[in-house]
Image (cartoon, rainbow, N blue to C red; front, side, top):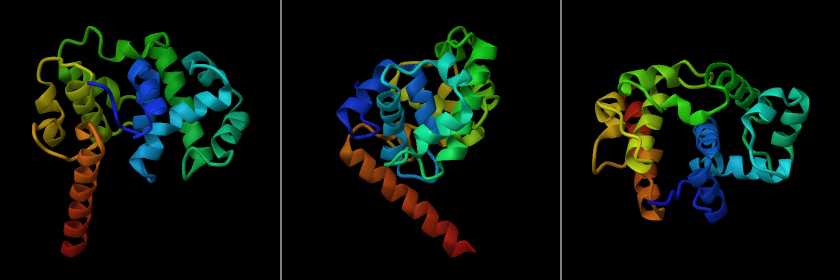
Length: 190
């Protein structure tokens, strides 16, 4: 199954072939439309002029990286803070996994270990980590034992709760509708 998370063929192709791009996109998926977050690694790649490199991003001049994020159109609503988060994440990947993103899930004993590894990353809380586990299981065929349970409601089949469930424009609309319903319910209970 080909990824269709940004709804842009070139950006989705990068997410498909580059685990770093996918991990960074998930990090950036906050306070902006999902398509923008998942297209951002491709836009960053364009601005760098070459493929994303975790070591380069970890060592990149912080102000220069923030400038790349802020260049119009900005890669995120909060370009400076998100550039910092990307750099922190890349540094953690270099320190803990030698820069190999796939080491996050390769050889884990079970999905609990994967979730722990994700939550330990800068910018990844429990919910974001659960969604990423669901995305890996549903669309990347990374299915350590217990992945659906660890992913919580995001691992359920036949639902439209998160980016893990987006496979085309129709499913994107259903995920958006679900999120609007959740916000409306939360607002009504206040």
